[in-house]
Structure formats: C-alpha cells, structure tokens
Image (cartoon, rainbow, N blue to C red; front, side):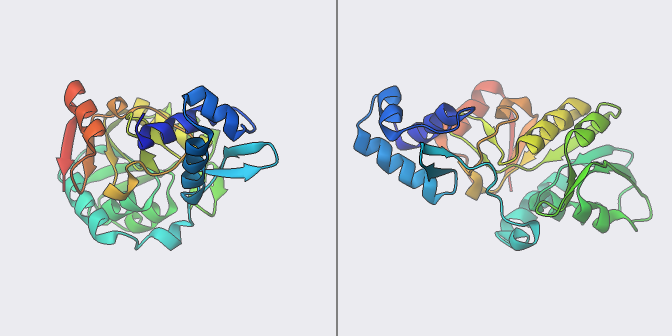
Length: 250
C-alpha cells in the first residue's frame, strides 16, 4: 500500500473513535508497527492527528484563522477565481462557500447582475455595495476563525433556496477522491450547498492534494467540476476521467 493510501486509511480508521494504539493500526493495515508509527508521525506533523494517552486520535479542528491564510498562495487562488468567474452570467443565483479562494472570486463578481447566497462575512463585505448584486446572508452561529456563520441553521436555510451555481472550498482532496474538511459542521453545510445548486464547482489549489481534514462531505464526483491551478495527482485525475467530471486548470 502506498504511503498516501496508508495515510487515508489511518484517517478512516480513526473516524468515530476516541483513539487507537499504533499496534492496532499496524494490524488493521497489515503493516509493521514501525511503518504505522512513521505514518502517524507524518500525519501528526501535518496536524491531522495528535497523540494522547490512549494512542493517536484525529484533530477536530486544524485550520488557521481566515485572516492568516488570506494572502497565502494568493497567485494560485486568483488564477482559480478568474476561471470560476467565467462560469457566472448575469441573472444567475450563486452560492458562495466560505474560504479564501472563494473570497478571491467575490471581488470579480461585483460588476455582475446576480444574486449571491453566502454565510461568509468577507464575501458579504466584498459585494454589499455592488450596485447590481443582491446578497442573501445565511445566518447561524458566528465563527471568528472562519469569519462566517456556521452550524445547522445555515444548512437548514439552504433547503429553502435553489441556485444555478455554487462555488465551494475545502481543506483537501484525498487520493481516493474524498473531499476533506476540518469541521464537521462545515462538511454538512457543503452537502447542503451542493444539494441546493444545479451545478457546483470545487475551487482547490494544488497545495490541497491531499490536504488535511478528518471530515468528508462527499467524493469529488459529488460536484460538477474542479477548478485548480495545476495537474491533478494521478489517482485523482483517473477518478475524474472515469466519471467524466469537468476539470479546469487555471
């Protein structure tokens, strides 16, 4: 089993468990204890798992504050946003997820005549004075870290709307095609976003393959397409080709 596949398998083993011993992980994956230990150290270095008295466990929240990552990898995010903007037409209703890449897109839509649904405060701030943009804020519990409204209220509100397009961010995409998120509630909101949109696109820069995150809202074939800034990893690319998914390289 390749290292990336083992890492994904360890995350899957830890879902829903308080902790696991390294020896038990090694047994379940049919690898040596030394290999399992190295894999756990690598996952810990990435901030995906942490050690405890009971063994190792998933980290429930590892994202940096929105403001801390806004300008990180900004050239790639801007290129992805430009490609995404080409998909938006006047008259569209668009759902915009939280996250810095989606926020880059919001600035490119200020001259459009569209309706935007969002729980993101930065997206709202970027579009609130746009003359022909109607902004509908999806309210919920305020999250300072993500600069958005969070929780079941947001997911419930989306069941009352229908959109032409949705643009989503994520914390990563695994080699097996699972979209990753560090927040359980945000994973649920992403599911609601996809359900409320006729077409949905994942905006993901190359640093997020495989990325981080213990929660998964869906596999990549749950969206209409991916917009990224470089070649997809071979396993992810093969998955996209087998499902006929649209892939846009910025």
